[in-house]
Image (cartoon, rainbow, N blue to C red; front, side):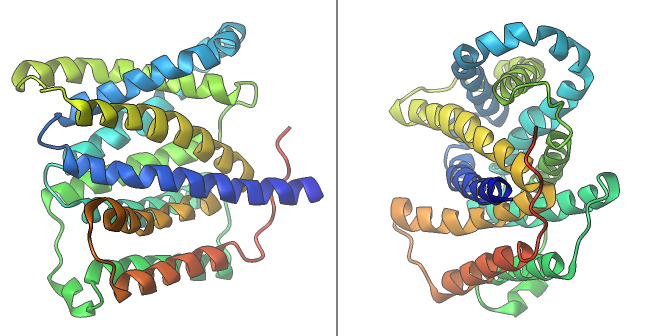
Length: 306
Protein backbone atom coordinates (compact mmCIF):
# COMPACT_ATOMS: atom_id res chain seq x y z
CA UNK A 1 0.00 0.00 0.00
CA UNK A 2 2.88 2.36 0.77
CA UNK A 3 4.27 1.91 -2.74
CA UNK A 4 0.83 2.46 -4.24
CA UNK A 5 0.36 5.66 -2.29
CA UNK A 6 3.82 6.87 -3.32
CA UNK A 7 2.97 6.17 -6.97
CA UNK A 8 -0.32 8.04 -6.52
CA UNK A 9 1.28 11.23 -5.24
CA UNK A 10 4.13 10.94 -7.72
CA UNK A 11 1.51 10.79 -10.48
CA UNK A 12 -0.06 14.01 -9.18
CA UNK A 13 3.32 15.77 -9.20
CA UNK A 14 4.07 14.55 -12.73
CA UNK A 15 0.68 15.74 -14.00
CA UNK A 16 1.26 19.21 -12.49
CA UNK A 17 4.73 19.48 -14.06
CA UNK A 18 3.29 18.56 -17.45
CA UNK A 19 0.56 21.20 -17.20
CA UNK A 20 3.07 23.90 -16.22
CA UNK A 21 5.12 23.15 -19.32
CA UNK A 22 2.09 22.82 -21.59
CA UNK A 23 0.57 26.10 -20.42
CA UNK A 24 3.06 28.00 -22.57
CA UNK A 25 1.90 26.16 -25.68
CA UNK A 26 -1.29 28.22 -25.96
CA UNK A 27 0.59 31.51 -25.63
CA UNK A 28 3.00 30.41 -28.35
CA UNK A 29 0.16 29.22 -30.59
CA UNK A 30 -1.29 32.72 -30.58
CA UNK A 31 1.91 34.77 -30.33
CA UNK A 32 3.75 33.17 -33.23
CA UNK A 33 0.74 32.51 -35.47
CA UNK A 34 1.81 35.16 -38.00
CA UNK A 35 5.43 34.02 -38.18
CA UNK A 36 5.23 30.23 -38.66
CA UNK A 37 2.23 28.52 -40.34
CA UNK A 38 0.40 26.02 -38.10
CA UNK A 39 1.26 22.75 -39.84
CA UNK A 40 4.88 23.83 -40.24
CA UNK A 41 5.06 24.75 -36.55
CA UNK A 42 3.74 21.31 -35.62
CA UNK A 43 6.07 19.57 -38.08
CA UNK A 44 9.20 21.39 -36.85
CA UNK A 45 8.20 20.72 -33.25
CA UNK A 46 7.70 16.99 -33.66
CA UNK A 47 10.70 16.58 -35.96
CA UNK A 48 12.93 18.04 -33.25
CA UNK A 49 11.21 15.97 -30.57
CA UNK A 50 11.79 12.81 -32.61
CA UNK A 51 15.48 13.63 -33.05
CA UNK A 52 15.85 14.32 -29.33
CA UNK A 53 14.13 11.07 -28.39
CA UNK A 54 16.11 8.93 -30.84
CA UNK A 55 19.29 8.53 -28.71
CA UNK A 56 17.20 7.80 -25.60
CA UNK A 57 15.07 5.20 -27.38
CA UNK A 58 17.62 3.59 -29.70
CA UNK A 59 18.36 0.55 -27.55
CA UNK A 60 14.75 -0.13 -26.54
CA UNK A 61 13.55 0.46 -30.11
CA UNK A 62 15.93 -2.13 -31.54
CA UNK A 63 14.94 -4.60 -28.83
CA UNK A 64 11.21 -3.99 -29.29
CA UNK A 65 11.02 -3.62 -33.08
CA UNK A 66 8.84 -6.73 -33.40
CA UNK A 67 6.45 -5.35 -30.77
CA UNK A 68 6.22 -2.10 -32.72
CA UNK A 69 5.37 -4.07 -35.85
CA UNK A 70 2.84 -6.14 -33.94
CA UNK A 71 1.04 -3.10 -32.49
CA UNK A 72 1.49 -0.69 -35.41
CA UNK A 73 -2.26 -0.10 -35.85
CA UNK A 74 -2.63 0.91 -32.20
CA UNK A 75 0.46 3.14 -32.42
CA UNK A 76 -0.90 4.71 -35.60
CA UNK A 77 -4.08 5.87 -33.88
CA UNK A 78 -2.21 7.12 -30.81
CA UNK A 79 0.16 9.12 -33.04
CA UNK A 80 -2.67 10.46 -35.19
CA UNK A 81 -4.75 11.70 -32.25
CA UNK A 82 -2.07 12.91 -29.82
CA UNK A 83 0.70 14.05 -32.17
CA UNK A 84 -0.57 14.77 -35.68
CA UNK A 85 -3.99 16.26 -34.92
CA UNK A 86 -4.03 17.64 -31.37
CA UNK A 87 -1.39 20.35 -31.46
CA UNK A 88 -1.84 21.07 -35.17
CA UNK A 89 -5.48 21.93 -34.45
CA UNK A 90 -4.32 24.13 -31.55
CA UNK A 91 -1.95 26.01 -33.85
CA UNK A 92 -4.65 26.42 -36.50
CA UNK A 93 -7.00 27.75 -33.83
CA UNK A 94 -4.33 30.26 -32.81
CA UNK A 95 -4.93 32.07 -36.11
CA UNK A 96 -8.56 32.74 -35.22
CA UNK A 97 -9.02 33.11 -31.47
CA UNK A 98 -7.23 34.43 -28.39
CA UNK A 99 -4.71 32.53 -26.28
CA UNK A 100 -7.16 32.68 -23.35
CA UNK A 101 -9.88 31.01 -25.40
CA UNK A 102 -7.39 28.40 -26.56
CA UNK A 103 -6.54 27.49 -22.97
CA UNK A 104 -10.03 27.85 -21.50
CA UNK A 105 -12.05 25.98 -24.11
CA UNK A 106 -9.43 23.31 -24.67
CA UNK A 107 -8.84 22.54 -21.01
CA UNK A 108 -12.52 22.67 -20.07
CA UNK A 109 -13.76 20.34 -22.79
CA UNK A 110 -10.91 17.84 -23.02
CA UNK A 111 -11.31 16.44 -19.47
CA UNK A 112 -15.05 16.13 -20.02
CA UNK A 113 -14.54 14.34 -23.33
CA UNK A 114 -11.94 12.05 -21.73
CA UNK A 115 -14.07 11.21 -18.69
CA UNK A 116 -17.05 10.46 -20.95
CA UNK A 117 -14.92 8.21 -23.16
CA UNK A 118 -13.38 6.56 -20.08
CA UNK A 119 -16.86 5.76 -18.74
CA UNK A 120 -18.10 4.45 -22.09
CA UNK A 121 -15.00 2.58 -23.26
CA UNK A 122 -13.01 1.74 -20.13
CA UNK A 123 -15.98 1.40 -17.76
CA UNK A 124 -14.40 3.80 -15.25
CA UNK A 125 -16.76 4.90 -12.50
CA UNK A 126 -17.60 8.51 -11.62
CA UNK A 127 -18.48 8.83 -7.93
CA UNK A 128 -20.02 11.81 -6.18
CA UNK A 129 -16.64 13.32 -5.23
CA UNK A 130 -15.30 13.19 -8.78
CA UNK A 131 -18.56 14.55 -10.18
CA UNK A 132 -18.47 17.40 -7.67
CA UNK A 133 -14.85 18.08 -8.56
CA UNK A 134 -15.70 18.27 -12.24
CA UNK A 135 -18.48 20.76 -11.49
CA UNK A 136 -16.10 22.96 -9.48
CA UNK A 137 -13.41 22.81 -12.18
CA UNK A 138 -15.85 23.76 -14.90
CA UNK A 139 -17.27 26.50 -12.65
CA UNK A 140 -13.78 27.94 -12.19
CA UNK A 141 -13.16 27.94 -15.93
CA UNK A 142 -16.53 29.57 -16.63
CA UNK A 143 -15.83 32.22 -13.97
CA UNK A 144 -12.57 33.03 -15.72
CA UNK A 145 -14.27 33.01 -19.11
CA UNK A 146 -16.98 35.37 -17.91
CA UNK A 147 -14.41 37.72 -16.31
CA UNK A 148 -16.45 37.66 -13.11
CA UNK A 149 -19.72 38.69 -14.74
CA UNK A 150 -21.94 35.73 -15.54
CA UNK A 151 -24.02 37.77 -17.99
CA UNK A 152 -21.00 37.78 -20.30
CA UNK A 153 -21.62 34.10 -20.92
CA UNK A 154 -24.98 34.90 -22.51
CA UNK A 155 -23.23 36.71 -25.37
CA UNK A 156 -20.43 34.19 -25.71
CA UNK A 157 -20.29 32.32 -29.01
CA UNK A 158 -17.92 29.84 -30.57
CA UNK A 159 -15.79 31.27 -33.35
CA UNK A 160 -13.98 29.33 -36.05
CA UNK A 161 -10.95 29.15 -33.77
CA UNK A 162 -13.07 27.90 -30.87
CA UNK A 163 -14.36 25.04 -33.03
CA UNK A 164 -10.79 24.13 -34.00
CA UNK A 165 -9.75 24.04 -30.34
CA UNK A 166 -12.78 21.86 -29.53
CA UNK A 167 -11.59 19.43 -32.21
CA UNK A 168 -8.12 19.55 -30.63
CA UNK A 169 -9.60 18.84 -27.19
CA UNK A 170 -11.47 15.81 -28.51
CA UNK A 171 -8.31 14.51 -30.22
CA UNK A 172 -6.38 14.83 -26.95
CA UNK A 173 -9.16 13.06 -25.06
CA UNK A 174 -8.92 10.15 -27.50
CA UNK A 175 -5.15 10.11 -27.00
CA UNK A 176 -5.56 9.94 -23.21
CA UNK A 177 -7.90 6.96 -23.54
CA UNK A 178 -5.60 5.14 -25.95
CA UNK A 179 -2.54 5.65 -23.75
CA UNK A 180 -4.29 3.73 -20.98
CA UNK A 181 -4.27 0.70 -23.30
CA UNK A 182 -0.57 0.86 -24.09
CA UNK A 183 0.93 -2.65 -24.24
CA UNK A 184 2.94 -3.17 -21.07
CA UNK A 185 5.74 -4.74 -23.10
CA UNK A 186 6.44 -1.44 -24.86
CA UNK A 187 8.80 0.72 -22.79
CA UNK A 188 7.65 4.33 -22.13
CA UNK A 189 10.64 5.86 -23.94
CA UNK A 190 10.23 3.67 -27.01
CA UNK A 191 6.48 4.29 -27.01
CA UNK A 192 7.00 8.05 -27.15
CA UNK A 193 9.70 7.81 -29.81
CA UNK A 194 7.50 5.69 -32.07
CA UNK A 195 4.42 7.90 -31.78
CA UNK A 196 6.56 11.03 -32.28
CA UNK A 197 8.03 9.44 -35.41
CA UNK A 198 4.68 8.23 -36.73
CA UNK A 199 3.01 11.55 -35.96
CA UNK A 200 5.75 13.49 -37.76
CA UNK A 201 5.53 11.24 -40.83
CA UNK A 202 1.75 11.69 -40.90
CA UNK A 203 2.26 15.48 -40.81
CA UNK A 204 4.78 15.47 -43.67
CA UNK A 205 2.32 15.52 -46.63
CA UNK A 206 0.34 18.41 -45.10
CA UNK A 207 3.63 20.19 -44.34
CA UNK A 208 4.69 19.99 -48.01
CA UNK A 209 1.31 21.29 -49.18
CA UNK A 210 1.36 24.20 -46.72
CA UNK A 211 4.98 25.01 -47.56
CA UNK A 212 4.12 25.24 -51.26
CA UNK A 213 1.33 27.76 -50.57
CA UNK A 214 2.85 29.83 -47.74
CA UNK A 215 5.52 32.50 -47.54
CA UNK A 216 8.95 31.23 -46.40
CA UNK A 217 9.54 31.36 -42.64
CA UNK A 218 11.79 34.24 -41.61
CA UNK A 219 13.98 32.55 -39.01
CA UNK A 220 15.22 34.52 -36.02
CA UNK A 221 16.24 33.88 -32.41
CA UNK A 222 12.64 33.99 -31.19
CA UNK A 223 11.44 31.44 -33.75
CA UNK A 224 14.33 29.11 -33.02
CA UNK A 225 13.78 29.34 -29.25
CA UNK A 226 10.10 28.60 -29.82
CA UNK A 227 10.85 25.40 -31.73
CA UNK A 228 13.33 24.29 -29.04
CA UNK A 229 10.80 24.99 -26.27
CA UNK A 230 8.09 23.09 -28.13
CA UNK A 231 10.33 20.20 -29.19
CA UNK A 232 12.15 19.67 -25.90
CA UNK A 233 9.76 21.04 -23.28
CA UNK A 234 6.18 20.57 -24.42
CA UNK A 235 6.96 17.41 -26.37
CA UNK A 236 9.66 15.28 -24.75
CA UNK A 237 9.55 16.42 -21.11
CA UNK A 238 5.81 17.09 -20.78
CA UNK A 239 4.71 13.92 -22.57
CA UNK A 240 7.03 11.74 -20.48
CA UNK A 241 5.53 13.26 -17.33
CA UNK A 242 1.93 13.09 -18.58
CA UNK A 243 2.09 9.48 -19.76
CA UNK A 244 3.65 8.43 -16.46
CA UNK A 245 0.83 10.21 -14.62
CA UNK A 246 -1.77 8.41 -16.77
CA UNK A 247 -0.27 5.06 -15.80
CA UNK A 248 -0.16 5.92 -12.10
CA UNK A 249 -3.48 7.76 -11.71
CA UNK A 250 -5.74 6.58 -14.53
CA UNK A 251 -7.40 8.67 -17.23
CA UNK A 252 -10.29 10.14 -15.25
CA UNK A 253 -8.06 11.56 -12.51
CA UNK A 254 -5.13 12.70 -14.65
CA UNK A 255 -7.11 14.67 -17.20
CA UNK A 256 -8.60 16.83 -14.45
CA UNK A 257 -5.18 18.37 -13.92
CA UNK A 258 -5.46 19.86 -17.39
CA UNK A 259 -7.74 22.43 -15.76
CA UNK A 260 -4.63 23.95 -14.18
CA UNK A 261 -3.34 25.04 -17.60
CA UNK A 262 -5.39 28.28 -17.87
CA UNK A 263 -4.34 29.15 -14.31
CA UNK A 264 -0.67 28.68 -15.17
CA UNK A 265 -1.20 30.49 -18.49
CA UNK A 266 -2.57 33.50 -16.60
CA UNK A 267 0.44 33.56 -14.29
CA UNK A 268 2.76 33.33 -17.29
CA UNK A 269 0.92 36.18 -18.98
CA UNK A 270 1.49 38.33 -15.89
CA UNK A 271 5.17 37.36 -15.77
CA UNK A 272 6.01 37.42 -19.47
CA UNK A 273 3.52 39.87 -20.94
CA UNK A 274 3.08 42.25 -18.04
CA UNK A 275 -0.66 41.68 -17.76
CA UNK A 276 -2.32 42.50 -14.45
CA UNK A 277 -3.84 39.78 -12.28
CA UNK A 278 -7.38 40.40 -11.05
CA UNK A 279 -9.55 38.96 -8.30
CA UNK A 280 -11.42 36.83 -10.85
CA UNK A 281 -8.18 35.02 -11.61
CA UNK A 282 -7.67 34.24 -7.94
CA UNK A 283 -11.22 33.02 -7.35
CA UNK A 284 -11.29 30.90 -10.49
CA UNK A 285 -7.93 29.40 -9.56
CA UNK A 286 -9.23 28.49 -6.10
CA UNK A 287 -12.29 26.83 -7.65
CA UNK A 288 -10.13 24.81 -10.05
CA UNK A 289 -7.72 23.69 -7.33
CA UNK A 290 -10.64 22.90 -5.01
CA UNK A 291 -12.23 20.85 -7.78
CA UNK A 292 -9.05 18.86 -8.27
CA UNK A 293 -8.80 18.14 -4.54
CA UNK A 294 -12.46 17.10 -4.33
CA UNK A 295 -12.23 14.93 -7.46
CA UNK A 296 -9.33 13.03 -5.91
CA UNK A 297 -10.99 12.56 -2.51
CA UNK A 298 -11.59 8.92 -1.62
CA UNK A 299 -10.36 7.78 -5.01
CA UNK A 300 -9.09 4.25 -5.31
CA UNK A 301 -5.31 4.27 -5.47
CA UNK A 302 -4.53 2.11 -8.49
CA UNK A 303 -2.27 -0.88 -8.04
CA UNK A 304 1.31 -0.49 -9.13
CA UNK A 305 1.88 -1.47 -12.78
CA UNK A 306 3.93 -4.59 -13.22
